Length: 226
Image 1: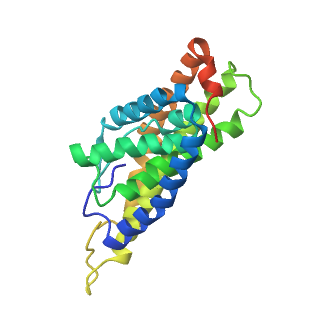
Image 2: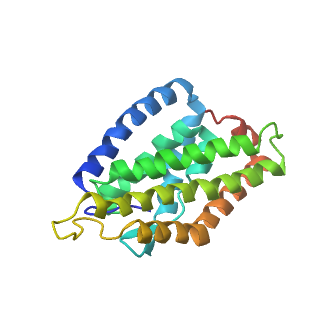
């Protein structure tokens, strides 16, 4: 799902940086106010876990990659704003040190994976597990469903961003200047792979970790904040 350099036009890159700046600002303020001291190591672990799981990339036709993110799990444990910070850190390190995702596309990648994914997944999890006891199997199921849908919604956004580029940036004779694939190719390519493969990885990992924590550290499931 990482967008490389050269696939989004300058206007799109600038737009997503501008969109993420207030989100990062709000996330930083909320995390400073709500994150407990004992949760700070968990925030670092969340960033590290997201970093590692995103390194298992599978190329997708069109220039991007498919992979799990771990964003919904981080959001369930820490709240979506803290998850936004954790995943942003992982994405920035990947882009700067490993070339995984473009530097010009950091804003777009963070919008998809550090904002859309954890927020969609977190609030879906909250809705599906409403009033369920901490040890309930409904929470495990809710976590899996939230992970699956959250990842696929993020993939859909990435596909739309790719697919709009030929419409926004092209030569006089219609040749695309950046991503060459329109919506009819980019969206199915991105969403299809995640629906069939990576969404299930995200769902299974999220559900299994929640199941483990129910038995070993149930207090962590009561710490996440909206």
